[in-house]
Length: 357
Ligand code: SP5
Ligand code: ZN
Image (cartoon, rainbow, N blue to C red; front, side):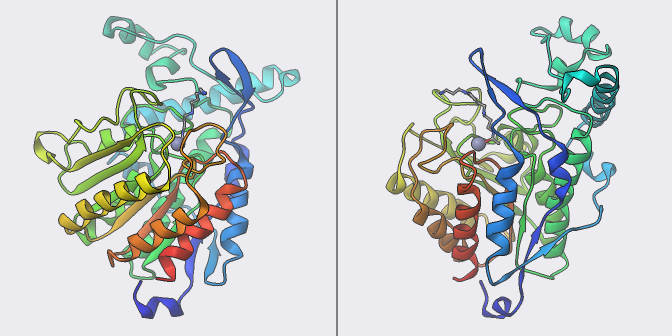
């Protein structure tokens, strides 16, 4: 980044509210396993980022409004999240002996005719969640909104010219959340909310380096020529979310070639990855992006328990370094990463690579 910014501290946006959202279990082909998207992930990232000499922690007040979210999401989705949290609280009160209550969908409308009745029923979860990985507890809405608020306030700091780099410690993550659905640990699309708030600076780009394709982000900006979405992820023929992330998906009519998917083979390593990164950065440079939102997932690393890429620590610093060459403001939004401590180590590598170059 520009020399001037080395004199100012990089703001790291954090809210402890995320701890209130703590589902216990998920299902892996019928096996009940611990929920992988756990609070310690973001606590590890917070600790590592705070330990850097050039950062300052910010606990922002609530500045995001539901009205702003409606630029990205359906009102029905927000209603659904609020209603489900209330429903979970009631159930929790009725069953104090049950431990933490997290609602999950139990009936999915596979055909439109099935959705019409279900949508307005008290059992509508299957109309708003595309998988089982986004359960809703009594405090989930509060945590989800606070997480989105971090992305919003981080982007706003850049918009106001207070900083050229900001890090939003979002939890729950967001890139699988689409216009009107949740899934894959995601409820509201934090990166999309950051991108939308940066538009007064002109057209820009979202670079998604999470291991999984950001199906939600792609969908939200599909017809939008002012936001380029570029994603490097595992081949959706073999990996979640399976239904999107293919190279052939290049954007809607109004925004053709404003969507760039760079799927990589299962088990990809450093060399292949950095080659794809250069392609991604070239596309961002070509469209003359005025800002970048980085959807930063660390589930690409060699020790992630849920994925197959084998990236070494040095790659994350290198990603930061290469992004710095774009010479545009960057809002980093935390996404996935399930090797708990790696979230800290790699976030610090990435931010150091970006800031110190
Ligand atoms: C934000 C983010 O990284 N979300 C990831 C959601 C995907 N996790 C659910 C997939 C788990 C499937 N387990 C099958 C493992 C096969 N070895
Ligand atoms: Zn992921």
